[in-house]
Image (cartoon, rainbow, N blue to C red; front, side):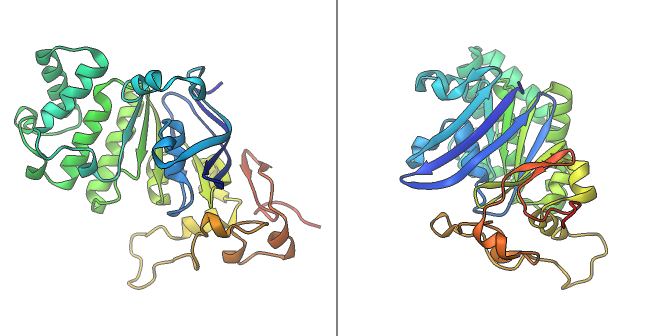
Length: 320
């Protein structure tokens, strides 16, 4: 069994099903990209893994989540609370939601180490400064004493990464960690995460809407659309020959060097809300390849080459 195994997980809020039987696996030392537009279910999947769905009135209605052989769905809340930060850490897309503006950043990193590792004040401080140095922050001892408002967006995000690492977790969930940053800083942050996974043997779930980020960082990718898995495969295979039209559309949106002004590619239409999911393929209203069956019958997630795809007419298949 994989280090993190999400099996056939469905998520409901009230009577509305927002996620429909999502599965994914992550091993230690591996980066899995969870990709899709806003509304695809990426952040809900992260909340399900971390046991945070009750905060928004949600619940896992089907399936299981297992971490290192432990079924997280059977854990008492007190045990799950101890797990968060210690075994599983979260990096959010907006560091200001994670940082207290009234506290020096060093004290905020210290709190995580003291809570989860039981370190004393001096040991926590030494560890925090060491983490800042590992994250390539110059003058780490000085930065340790600063407040969030004294820092750039990229620096704040490095502080949030340091907080995530302070409890020495095995799994990091990074939810759109570079959305608010410019392209150069974004690339630096992603490279830091990649290096951390390779050096520490962490498992990383990288949530993003950007296939360019997936190409830069990930080993495996799961493409979500409207609460369902559209496609999953190794990153190299996805980019060599993606099978689902939605995956191909996402790849076409990647900005390329030398691209002419005004030539950006987009996907027409919007991700449907859960209240308006169609009976058939949920991508059908936006799909240029859709046929009659796509309106009426939901495609099953099936093996396709080395990956899996939920499409009646996947690229590379033979049709009679």
